[in-house]
Amino acid sequence: MNEWNNFNNDGYQTAVQAENEITLQRYVAGVMRKVYGKMTLGLLVTAITSYLLLSSQAAMSLIFSSSASIWILFAAELGLVIYLSARIDKLSTGTATALFYLYSALNGIVLAPIFIVYTGVSIATTFAITAGTFGAMTIFGYVTRQDLSKMGSFLFMALIGMIVCMLVNLFMKNAMFDMLISGACVLIFVGLAAWDTQAIKRQCAMADPSDLGKVATMGALSLYLDFINLFLHLLRFFGSRN
Image (tube, rainbow, N blue to C red; front, side, top):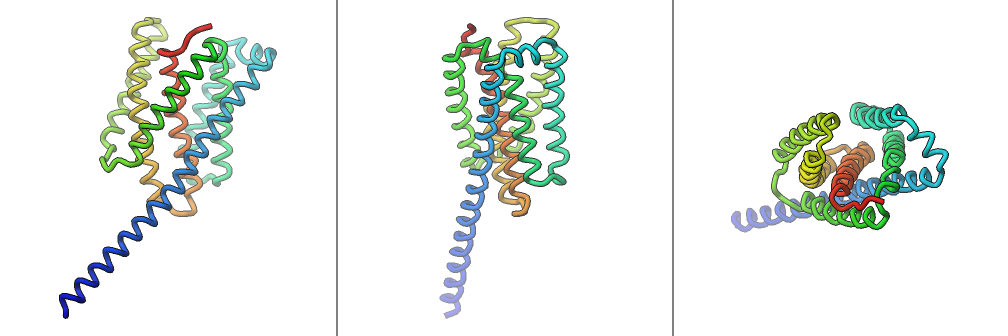
């Protein structure tokens, strides 16, 4: 009789654990949909901003007439990312989301010239390749049971190395070295897409429900940066200049 009761208790606990796991999976999936939704909207803000800027020759001339304005834009973007990362705990969800979309708009201004440099067909083709590659890696990061933490540390170190190489090549201006850097960066951001997805998934599972809006915003920013950087480096290989 005791063995039968123990069997029933074990079966009940197993069923409860299974039900809790399913509930958690559905909960995390719902938050991840918000992450992808915000990221997609950020990409749309970037594209629309670029389109509107390109439609105004006067605005293009004003912004890109001097290198100083470009450096100011880069500084503003970097400042927004640092501010969001450092102050996310103290910001409201609405403010954090607004700053993310502001960053997306600034990036649309910075990226507008690529629509002049490269043909529309090659940009569309590269975007499709980026979307397919990014989608495959983010799905892998979401479903894999492998721990990608160590891979993330390696990728961040590699990314810092590539940034140093890019700065050095600003003075060297070696075209072959530049292509090698872009190739390495493609691999880095492909890996980061999977690593960031797994990290965001874990954050969603552990975060306080009141903070999930901010977790979704920061997750969207991370994936947005992975997508944009992957797109820009793939454009070096698949883009055809006008």
